Length: 184
Image (cartoon, rainbow, N blue to C red; front, top):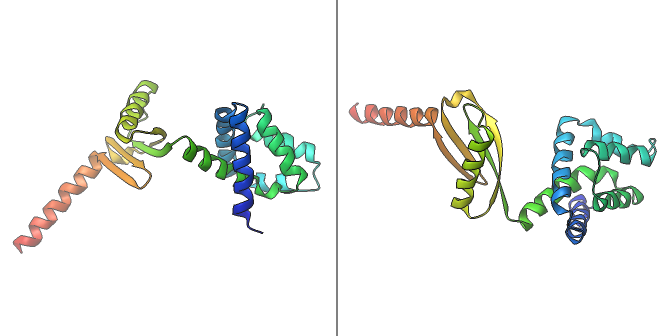
C-alpha cells in the first residue's frame, strides 16, 4: 500500500471539494491547526487509529484537535476516512493538504528570525515587502532568537537572507581571518 498516494488522493479530494463549497481557506486554517497538534501531541495519531474507541468519539477528538467547529467539507472527508478505516493516514492527509493548498494558491512558506518579537504592524509591513520581492503570497513563521543580536534572518524555500548583526560580525571575522592567513 502506498501511503503517499492514498493520502494525496484524500488531500486532493478535500481541497477540490472545499474549493467547490468556498471553504478552502477555513479548511486550510483547520488543517494547519491540526498539523501543529499532531506535533505537540504525538499520541493523537494512535488515538485516532485506535479501533477500540468508537468512531464518533475519535471524530470528536479529531474536530477538537482541529480547533472546534469544522467546515462541512472537512466533516465529510473525516466520515469517508473513518468509513474506509484509513484513520492512520489522517496526519499524512493533513500535511499533504497543506502542501497542495500552498501549491495551488502560490503560497511561499518562510521563517523570519528576529532578536525580539515583531508587533503586528511590523510583521505586516515586513511580509508585504517580501511579497513584493517574490511576487507571491508569503506565510512567515516568526521565530525569536536573541543570539542574532539585531536585524533578521529570513528563510524562504531554499533561500536564506542573513541581515543579522551576528551574521555581519561573523562575516567581518571571516575577512580578518583571510587577511591574517595572507600575511603569514
